[in-house]
Each structure stands twice: as structure tokens, then as C-alpha cells.
Length: 281
Image (cartoon, rainbow, N blue to C red; front, side):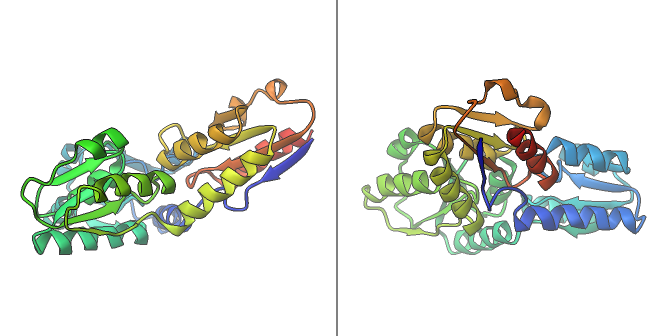
């Protein structure tokens, strides 16, 4: 059976940078070490770090109780008040926020201080979006569907600054912006979907269109992996979403033809390689 593995599958720059920063702290023995939230949305990586002594802080309350240690801000970024709290408690800060996300923080802070209303296109429950929201000095609106875009109103008639979650579906972002643009508000649109996400989604769509079966690998909480699955499913009905090789039922794959493989930005290369080898047997 022919197997096509996406060149863009696996760790993106921001994720690799964040993971490396945590392992650097472990190697340097700077304990206790904490990450504010799981460093990435991949259970195997988080479990390995926990075995090495890295603890995950799930809430602000847990952070408030710390008296010492190193806190690593994950690639998703956090709201400004978390930085302020870490500084207030004199904890050692390692900022592993993805540079693409950091750029959005600066945009939102700057434009909101100018008086613009901030509109984020993304998943309101995703930690990256929550972090972005926390850099605005004015109330923020968040939308992720066409229905929400249709209902959006700018009653104050102020300029609207539109930004996006970095891992949002590129085509869907353009569609939502189109709907809002028809309302004829004064808007500035900043497509803050990172280039790596666009490339990953474009390549996944092309491979899925060619494949008889598509395998998408990534953590169950990974937003960008979920988007890849949605994109591939539209092109290839036989699309499977797995976290590790253990989730793959090789007997369910077509006995002949072409299998495509892609993976989210938080998926380690060794898992991708394991799945690839299994498909080639």
C-alpha cells in the first residue's frame, strides 16, 4: 500500500521551542519546575515531563499558592494578569509563548488602547484565545461560526480590530470576515493565522483528496489537529483521528490503495514514524 506522509506533519516551530525550553530547565536542575497548563496538547509529552519532575498548574489558584520555583508559560500564551502575578510572587519566569501568539497579544493591547473593539475569530474555550482576550483593555467579542458572525453587532460604532486564533481554519476565517464586512463597520482585519498552520492545512487537504484513507494524528484536546481532521474528512470519507499507534486499527484500513498521514503541531515525530511503519507492513 502506498503511504504519503505530509512534510508539514508534527511539531511546529512554536511547539518545538516551548518543549525544548522545559527540557532545558529539567537538564539544568532548576526545580521545582511548573508549566502553566500542559506545555502542549499531547499527553505522551506531558507524561514524560511529569516523570522528570515537571508539574502542571491547571488554575490561577494553584499558581497563587506557589512560594518558589520556575513557571514556564506554554506556547499558547496567557493573559497579562498571569505575567503580573508571577512577577508579584518573585517566581522565575520562562516565557515559551509562540512568537506568532505573542504578536497577537501586542496587536490586541495596542489597538484596544487606541479605543478599537477587539473581535477574535476562534474557539472561545481554547487557552490561546483566552490568553489573547486577556491583553485587551476593552471588552472582547469572540466568534467561531457563521451564525455568530451574522448576529455580531457593533452598537457603539467604534472601529473593530479583527484577529484570529493562530490555528483557525483559513477558509473559515475568510468566510466569517466576509460576513462581518457586509455590515459595513469600520474594520481592520489582521489575519493572524500562522503560516505553518496554513501550510499544514493546505497540504492535508491535497493529500486527503488523493488518498483512499487518511490518518490524522494528534492529542484529543489539540485544536489544530481537530481542524485538520475536519478538513481531511471533507476530502476523504475514510479519515481516522488517532493519538498514538495504539488507537490505530490496521484492519480497518483499505487493503490496497493509498494512505495519507498528517499530524497536528503537538505530535512528536516518533509517533508519526510508528504509524507510518505500521501502514507499510
